[in-house]
Image (cartoon, rainbow over all chains, first blue to last red; front, side, top):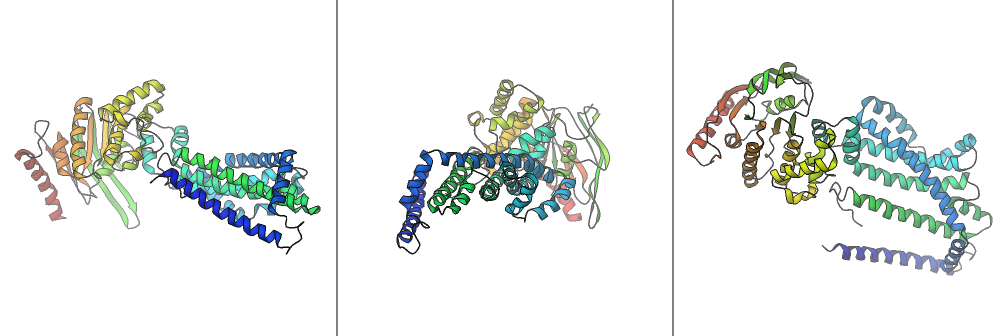
Length: 263
Length: 253
């Protein structure tokens, strides 16, 4: 099997589906079924995107969104990963946390936004907490199942070689559950990325990709909306592929702990 | 004084169908640098006994002494090799796996890597130092596991059917390699197996165990010169003797 030829083929397939989707959209936009102001053509969207990039506003919106996103995501990692691992290791923790997680998990993170606004006011805090909330559960549950399914021989072997709890945690449990943790990070990122845009629509002021879409609605700026949507999609895609993809290649794929994903 | 003393070791555990005796009053000694095999059919408690010696299980009765001291819990005086290839850490290279015990001991990196390299040379894997376990064959992975168990220099090496999952040819190679490693390192080895040929090839003495309840039935000293020839008459006689001890049990059970 030639890996690079495979890669080119899959890129080509992805390009074909994107081009077809774009063509359908463009035909629809030019058909006159909707007013041009509401359904801008792709060149119009591209031009607006270009303008927003050149004047720096798109960069700032993106940076604000990423800042809220990464802050909340980091908070979720710090809280949920140790808790999930503790759930897998210690029965009482599992018994205490699991019912709470089961009740809280089905609540959509955006449903908390009005409550959080009451508590924390408009601004970054709400978005950060919403991101944290959205990201916590996939991290928690994946870490938990990762620890429960860890190969007991690794723990035994490490124990026999004199590993204490600290070494066991950092040198066996964390790498040993890495396939689950990475899956958790991916799922958490996706949920958090959706949540941050939603939270910004409701709770942010002045900056943020979610806010700019919501704000553009007031002025019927459909081209701004579409341009922002494109940036949201592209940024999410880059993170998923580049950040988590390389994390996966550097760890679980290299170690043979996970099969090569179909790309 | 024997290196390891096993005195009346029993293990009784509760199951939904009542109390089951997994191991009953196992008693024997192992001398310094002796290669002892424990042979028995599945369910005779031989792996249980090894796990008790390793300190992973606490016996419900009896006592184990190593060098005169009673054993409780696991310790770095014992290295262990399991049957499952999955025992290696997949996220560490062969060298990283072998160095793990030394790392836990706080040995500085250059020194522990040098020792790990020597251990890998001992099991003839010096060319695969930087390989991850999933790139190694089953036999190679078990050799890494042996090197890993020896690297922090325990006095005792415990082996739980380490070659049972290997094909016959690899198994023969591994037996020769292990006999060689044992000769060079002079460890006290306890090797659990259900394969009598393994036992006759490797052991100074064989402890035969029988199930229901798991007890020590007899001991057989293997008085053959090394390296042993698995095709010699004497070798086959020892195999027959062990099989007879095992077979008597199967008929009466």
